[in-house]
Image 1: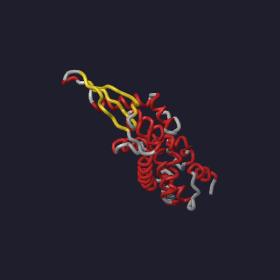
Image 2: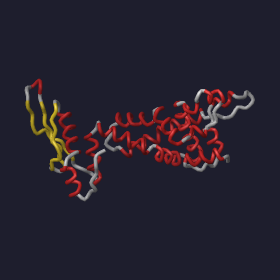
Image 3: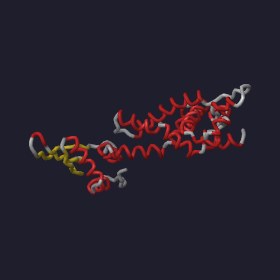
Image 4: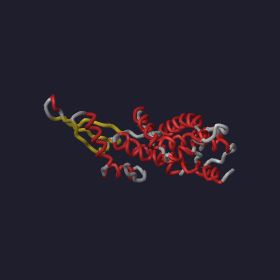
Amino acid sequence: MSPRLETAQNIAGHVFQNPALLEQALTHSSVNHNSAKERAPNNERLEFLGDAVLQLALSEWLYERLQTADEGALTKLRAQLVSTRALARLSRQLGLGSHMLIGRGEEAVGGRENENILADVVEAVLGAIYLDGGLAAAQGFVRRHFAEALDAAGRLEHEGNPKGCLQEICQTLGPVNLRYEIIAESGLDHAKNFTAAVLWDDEPLGTGTGASKKEAEIRAASAALESEALQSSLKRRGAPIIQPP
């Protein structure tokens, strides 16, 4: 195995039984434009496979990690993680572009920094890992290299989903009985205001007011996430103090 492939293998974190798969994953289709006589296998088919493997591995991981998120939220997060921009960013972080084989013409126009090429090589390498080591090896690659992006995406999702965030924090102690109650209404029929309280086993954690019951509950959850009552409840129940994302 060449030093270039050895370095790429270390980046991938997988020891290839068939290094030719890694070589193919790192070979852009423009290489074949250099010579009509030499047709090197390129990474397009592996990219096709890796795209599907990435979707599966991330879907399973999101399902495990974000147990209160609904289908829409999970789909949105997955789309963020597999976007061309996100994959290109990861490719740059790993340095995959410098280990690729690229045709002279593509090299001349900055192909190693092309976002589509960089994104595709991540998927191609994942496809190669899957063929060489199976689904478990591919999942290992995803969980190693997408953890930071998933954490960041999860924080952004929680900012727009305080009820889900509160539920997950309280669930560090196992099944939890969180409930929301409308404790006050005010205003005219066409301009109502509602005040909601969120309670954990009858213990109030926070209140919030909004123009609808749903909005009031969301604001109650947001207040609870920043409250001393939540931290006191966690401590009293024997859980470590957990800061909201």
